[in-house]
Length: 244
Image (cartoon, rainbow, N blue to C red):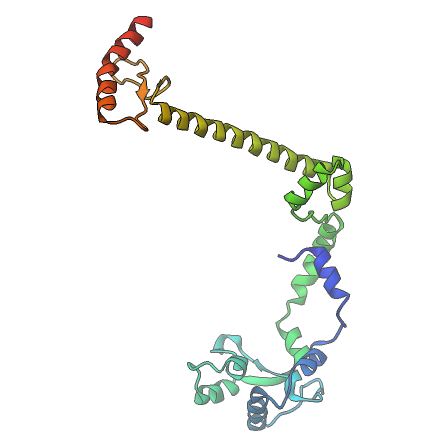
């Protein structure tokens, strides 16, 4: 999805051309597709649209199906894509279903002008209240601006966004830093417990009695120490019950 500002910027690089002129400007009759098209027009015996346009080259002439229900494929698919599923005999049969139109008339044949005129007021009304959303801000740049002493309102003016957008970035940063600090402290605590082999409270629940049972960390303990730790578990559990 392109942004409206991107579309306007691209429009400034363009010239406004009709479909006939645009096709003739970008297509060449000397190409392989152009030579096949010329042969098909010779077989059709027509090199002029019903409006009188014949063009400077064949690029502005199209093959239009008179009855869309009988349409099997577009002849342009054979001209430009050369599909292996389409044979020359199939192209000749499809050619009999078509008439030669210029690109402008061909476009008008397929364009639903009635639907456009019916929806045009709704389109105009919607565009009046159109407001383009700001692009996602570079969080690293916002953080560096904050470190350099810029205020939130100054950053918002720099990017052309609301102050709340900058505040959201700051809140998410503070939340992530707080979460990272908690995780770092938890990892340090777990590492210390593994190194010392101390029992810590808050382990898994004893399903039989509903009391918390201390868990012994056996990080760096050898086999005799682990056996002694297992022997002490019942006594620790009993003392915990007495305290409760």
